[in-house]
Figure 1 (cartoon, rainbow, N blue to C red):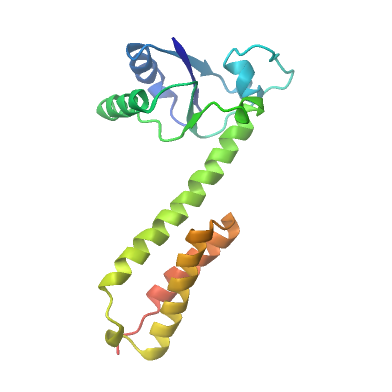
Figure 2 (cartoon, helix red, strand yellow; figure 1 turned 45 degrees about the vertical axis):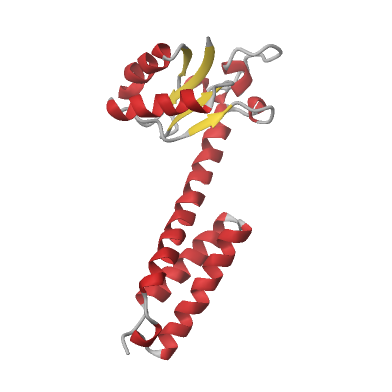
Length: 184
């Protein structure tokens, strides 16, 4: 059976249902406590050549699953069953050569940053799509010019995958420009 690392920092009440689904899918759940989240992912996954560190972790308010060599179909099956049982685990990762050396708490923080980044990207995508329903002639020339400038900056930002600070600033400018559109 393949291992799945589980950390329940936000919703520990999901643990029993999540573990049951994984076992039904012939996966071995490894539940990590708050104290253990300072250990390397490889150690927690019981990989060879990893030893326990002396540091103690503390609660981080998010849930995470780390899959070890699990195929996409199995992950989709887990997602389907977890929705039915109201125990979704939105933050998921695959065990990699790179992250097996990370402390779980560091991986949690990195995934949280990525989640926030992609939330801004999704908001920008939504606003870009909504733009197709806007008619230039319905707005004042100056407000449209500000909106158009912010639109292209937002589009460029998601194309080049900029930093978190940049994507947040671009989103805020775009949102403000959209709110600032004035009817002609």
